[in-house]
Amino acid sequence: MKSKLKLVQLVIGVAALLFISVIVLMYPAEPKQKFYAVEKVTIPPESKHLDLESIECMALNIYHESRNQTLGGRLAVGYVTLNRVNSKKYPNTVCGVVKQARYNKWFLAKHNKKVPQRNKCSFSWYCDGKSDVPLESNAWEEAYLLAIHVINMYDVISDPTKGSIMYHSTKVKPYWIGAYKYQVTIDDHIFYGSIQ
Image 1 (tube, rainbow, N blue to C red):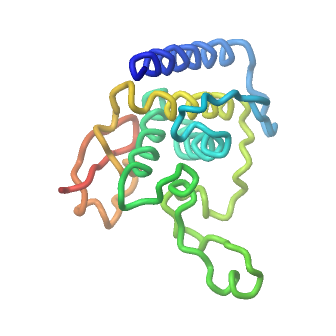
Image 2 (image 1 turned 45 degrees about the horizontal axis):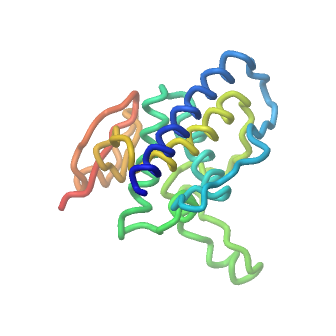
């Protein structure tokens, strides 16, 4: 049964990548356009994190963190997200990991609404004060399809980040790098795993 599931996952993953290639070639990007690529997705019941909310959160993370990276760089961001989901140090859902932040206590007390503190999030785009709505149609469509692929194929194909749970741009040197083990550099991101 497991081998059939793995084969189905592999077929879905390959189909998603082929679909991405076709879409990128067929539809040129239109600037400043809000675009949601997939209207309906059918989710196999066996899928652990493959639900519409998880796909949306993963796609937003891939889009905002790595839309200017190669395919390998975008996949790496997806893998780090799922590596965190599978770590006991982070929330156990895709959206929980993506939206992990320090929240404004005053706003919660006064308005009963969770608002992340600016620049106090695991992924900087989530609380940078800018709109999170994707505007680049091709990049958003690719991110959405890659999210499906990464979530679906996580246990099937090898992790390009070698189990990393942290990364940063080559342009910065964060305070926390000494607490993690260097794993790999992909495009302009440096990836780190836990020091066990």
